[in-house]
Image (cartoon, rainbow, N blue to C red; front, side, top):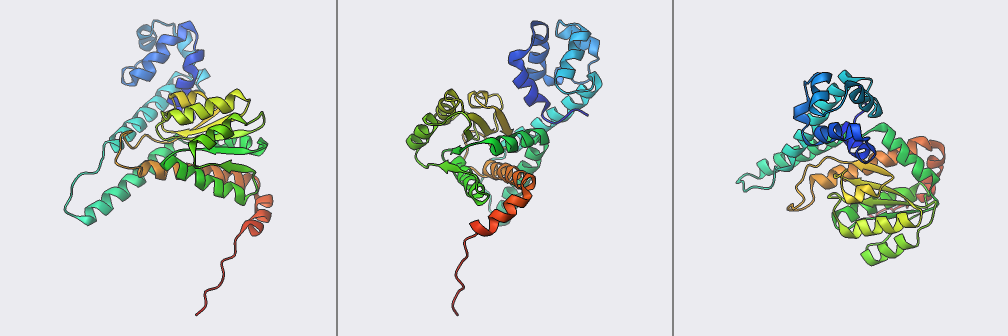
Length: 285
């Protein structure tokens, strides 16, 4: 079975696709239901390509062959349909507080489970390596994404990684403009459309810094600036009543990244934790 993230890898590959592959890539991304279940010859005819071109494309995407590609596409298409179904479950009036408890909890659980299916171990490993190699880490985010960025900041300083975060966007932009080669920017934006974050990412990248983007939109302008994309499920509408399941899935991704880093540097992190632990004074009775 091919690695998870087939559609994300395909979107990333789209700009590099050969002339012979472009029709096939476009059809898969825009109309995956038209491809599912078709034989290789049927799909080749649909895409005006040769079967050999389709096989090469499948292998470039990490699939063992066309059958493996079909299995991965069925899985990914179902996953994104689940994601879309969860995203339309907005707040509606209900007379029961118990119903509210059930619905909010269920949506958060569904968001975590759907996001889990998108996580690729290889991507997490790549991000851990980028954190290892960084001179300094600059964190970026606005609104609820800033809360997620601040959570990651507090985690990274516990393991003595030099990092910085600013609440003010102008300060974030100044920080981006002063980043250097060897620095790492981690930009968090659920929508992937926040212009301020796109501006910061471009400024940091122009100075030679590497960029990790945490977003639901792997095909966004922000993701296009990234060296590595951490994708979470699109389980909330962009125009939403308030970040809920989206914030939970972003925090979960931060936890995964942090624990993966600690696991890779277990002994040094265990030495850091006692030093970075703030002892609370005992309560007097």
